[in-house]
Length: 113
Image 1 (tube, one colour):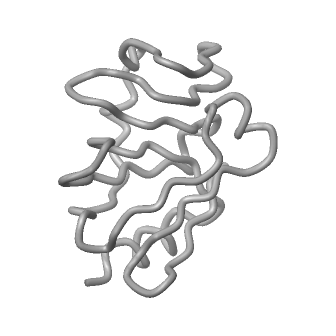
Image 2: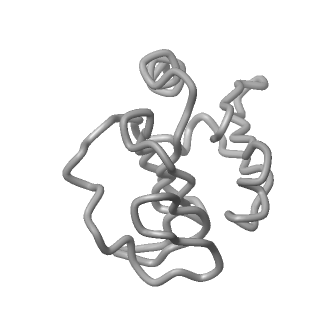
């Protein structure tokens, strides 16, 4: 699970609990101007997430860490129903695919310009 907060013009994506170990990441900071959009799309949750480097994947249970598929993407998802896709520009990651507590509220926050 990931919590998202806005601090000035920077979004802070904080990875919670044991997910820090599985994802091998604790916090990602992204400038507001580097976020293209946040959305939900079940079609992007294909069986193959990409090449895992580094991270954890137990099919049907958890996908967490860095995966390479059409660019470098960060995953932290256990429950696809609460997952968001955050498209980025000019960043280390091309996309963040993250599970959040309240997807609708988080999408509103991320999509506010």
